[in-house]
Image 1 (cartoon, rainbow, N blue to C red):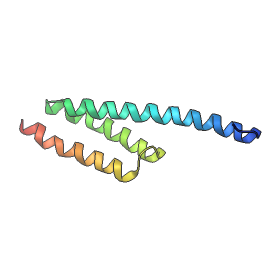
Image 2 (tube, rainbow, N blue to C red):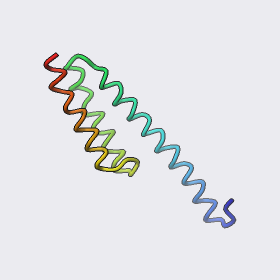
Image 3 (cartoon, rainbow, N blue to C red):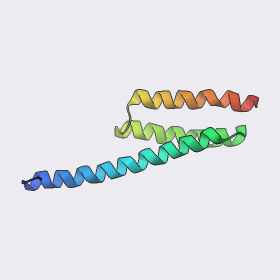
Image 4 (spheres, helix red, strand yellow):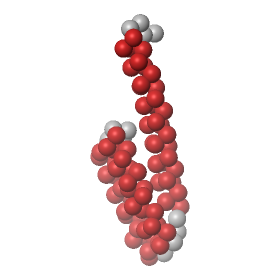
Amino acid sequence: MANHKATKKDVRQAAKRRDRNRYYGKTTRNAIRDIKEITEPGAFTEKMPDVVSMIDKLAKRGVIHKNKASNLKRKLAKKVPATKAA
């Protein structure tokens, strides 16, 4: 366990950050899962900007790598034409 005052504070801050990052990561994963299940094109195009924004925020905060964010967005964007054709 930490012995110095500053180290104890750092442990507290790290715990808060970890909880916050886990919350945002899980929320984004749920949003991605929900948008993949959408079958009607109108609803997909409505929700797409919100999910992309969530992914970008995760990358900006450093929760996920920027390349992972771009791969996630690419995979979601590929789904758009498939939804319109259906």
